[in-house]
Image (cartoon, rainbow, N blue to C red):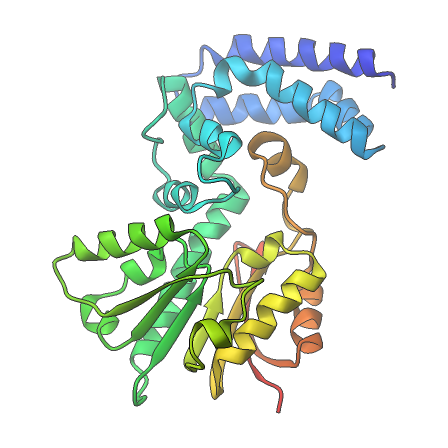
Length: 319
């Protein structure tokens, strides 16, 4: 297929969709229109053409975004994802929106609001919200353990929503360290916790969980639980190994390590790339296990959410 032909197909498909979308009054209608959009032969042709080369992929992605801009620029979540105000995809503010599954505060119209809700209700955002809930439940159980100090380290903590949702009486049983390279996300989390009027002692560490030596940054402190959720999905192999090695350096000999991956066979990666500029390193459930074992970890349990879209690995040091 020649470039000008796929451009014509994008233009005609988007024009048809835009006309119909302007009349959508509810989420069910909009969802149906998008389903028609993705099922259209013109879209299939575009996807096939894009997958034939990296250059074509980029060309089609940009053309599609431009053609849908008249309505997508009404959506606060779409604009936030593409503009990356914090400099990276999947930032803490976007995740807060995903967790709440509400209309974004910067959305400009009722149609933009429907697009916000449609985007956050798809399989991957739903799985991300369920991942947060699973982690919160895991931390609740961690807080109930009879441990001398019960130290917990969150690497790439973001806004720490899973911590903020803990009951205060459980939260006070944990000695928490929030570590992130973006100080704004840690401050957001700490300010949100302060607003609850409860007093918590939480250590704030601004550092990079991949490139910094965390044993040095944390002055050799060891933790009963070390976890990192979401970062691995953006890391090629050698950087993923560095993150896990840092987790190993900071966990107690009998402590637990938690990390997760998105299983690329369970969701449409092209959609999140084209529409939201979220690009993940392709991994499967098996490859997540292999990564842990390669780094000298023993996987003791696996959890999954949303029918396996996201896999959580509970690990211990392989002595």
